[in-house]
Image (cartoon, rainbow, N blue to C red; front, side, top):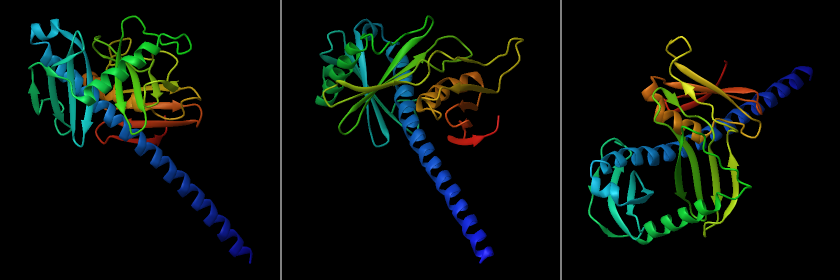
Length: 266
């Protein structure tokens, strides 16, 4: 009877550990899915903007952009200064985000989806100056606004960008959720400040991995962490970074080659 009791306890403990690991892996999977979409959007904008900048007339008439996706494709639409027409449409496939699948640099009317995304994006941006959101843009950095349409809501991410070489601009990132009309219903700031990672140490030594910590309100690696790292990490010669989450008291490591998150030791 005593042996059976010990066996039962061991089975219960094993089941609890298995459930915790399974739940954690499910969380990691959802973070990766969101990070992949953010990266696809931002990388497509990066590379299509490079294309746009080769045409001075288009740049002089530039009035913003919107991004959408369907299946494996990402669509970037650039609009004129009046925001009434498209001045360029560029399509990428997830299999190659460096070279456009198609590009059309002729003016044309906006589609219903493009009009909706542009209207919602402007509505959200007009709400951001409200003091309760306390959106700040540190000197030397520029904001990138990533709007994603879901079934009954929109999400607007703000990520920081930089032109400084050898820097990964972690931090000062936000997520705003809205209803179907673009009114903000909830929001979150993932990091309290900028925590840039540098590819070289104080004595010029090469840095191969970055690490930063999260407040208790951000208990996991975030999709914004991963997207930012994927955009800038390759230029800094880094393949992985770690986050210490004080809420869970765990270190999480992201590896760019495998596109995975793992619990690890420092």
